Image (tube, rainbow, N blue to C red; front, side, top):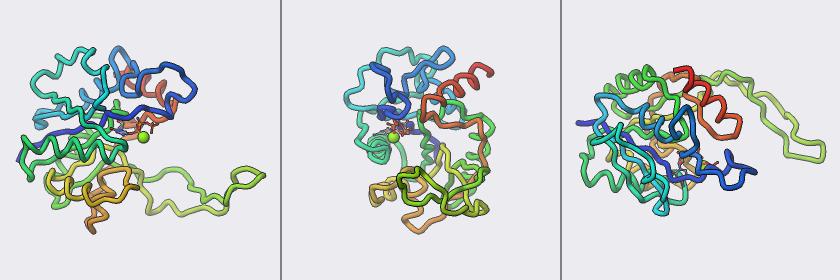
Amino acid sequence: MALHALIPAAGVGARVAAGTQGAPAKQYLALAGHCMLWHAIRCLSHPAIETVFVVLSPEDVVFSQYDWRAFAGRLEPLYCGGATRRDSVYNGLVAAMAGIQTDDWILVHDAARPCLPAQSLQTLIDTCLQDPVGGLLALPCADTVKRIASESAQGVRSLHTESRASLWLAQTPQMFRAGLLAQALRLANAEVTDEASAIEQMGLQPRLVQGSRRNLKVTYPEDVAMANALLEMQ
Ligand code: CTP
Ligand code: MG
């Protein structure tokens, strides 16, 4: 079986753009000389990954304005993004499956993680290829975790401290067999925010593969400067 990647890139980036008028969608923000989506695709330039499917909004008029020649022959844009991340991944996967096998592996990676280290990707692939379920990059929770009381006039207040001993934070890529993932996402409820939670809802236990703090997700305006600094350092 082969390996392919799928990047959902049909979001608008509302949180990163809060208060910024006329800003491009998050995946097209400029970082270290290229747009964020370009970096996310470059992170997946691994000899074992045959195709990188990029799921775009049907209304996207920006993608075609960029130069994608660095990825010629491996990049396949799909204009079938949906209202939620789950919808975009599911629609893209259904479209991609016209040309791939159900047993092939799919690595789903957010356009919003443009700094994925090559070593993390390699470890994920090596581990998941041996795994009956598949898995994802994740990190053990390092911070002290607070459960908040219901919000009052006195602001947000801590009710108690949760044990972090059994908590990990999910990242991407998340690597599963295409057929299993399509089935899981089709059945998943609307709350799923990643592929692994859809797999969990089927009663399966995805493998957690320790990733890197460098694989940060650009969500808020401050994250843009951090991602830029990491990419400039490379
Ligand atoms: N995404 C998508 N389709 C959607 C929503 C999100 O393909 N309907 C993609 C985003 O483009 C991004 C990834 O899913 O690459 C992770 O989503 P997130 O970081 O939440 O990005 P946005 O949804 O664009 O940002 P926000 O939630 O702040 O609006
Ligand atoms: Mg979102």
